[in-house]
Image (tube, rainbow, N blue to C red; front, top):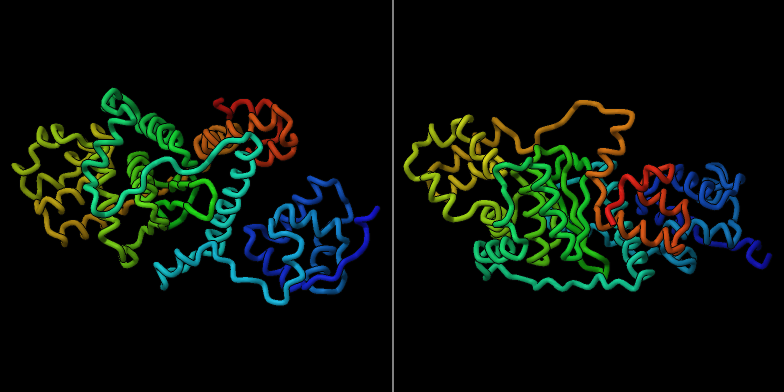
Length: 381
């Protein structure tokens, strides 16, 4: 009863918070009405609050903030502080513009880091970084060999496993290092990593890449994590503006997958340009070592076996991303969802659910499911 009074806020501040939340006003209304079972909280009601036509009830403001996570005093501010979610990314690529849909998607993952932190705290789980931070002075090949050993990767029969299984193995090892790995359609981003701000680290891999490309991107983003370098990896040559860091991360990824003795066995140096760039040969290498064909072509360039023009011409002919345009429906939604959600995240949500730390609605919302059987299908505890 004490929370039913209306309260005067700065509607522009609320509008700013919603615009930068990752939710559209319609999505926010849907979530509030679903979670709190309030029928009057509709699009017209929220629109009138944003436009300053009505003042919200205090408990409604708290409902809104349960998703925006700004704190109720925030909405009284005359000038809201600038949202810093992607300031670093934008400064690094000042001429690159995220599409509105991709920007909203990335903001949702940034908000998800806050939720993951809350879920960890409910279980008294530390998400503090235990993995050492490396620098560009460290040899990426030596670091790759170290993590290949730490991940027991020499025990994996790479050649006789499917790429999706290799991705899963590496993903699990990386998540053991307190990094949450998700997959999603990222348009012209190969991948990205969110680190810092006292939230758990999160890697995003583009789910529209070919399978070996996903493996390489996952390792590449993990290399950024090792360097403590927050990054958007853009699939557009003109935005590859930090070659030193990119070369380090690419070298780490390649040498994690390709042992020195295997590279010697392939005798790259004995082949001419036509042989090296022959698609049947590149397919053989990619299938055997689960490394993308583009990564091999880049390696040939670094070894001075082909020119920069040869490398760039290959990239133009065969783009890094292999779009999957087929539409899958029905039960395949959950099969796809299982590959996209972080296993560590689904287990974290499930444990908090069965211990009563979060509600059924919250668990279903986190895991994007509608019933218990589907939730059980996703979880690997």
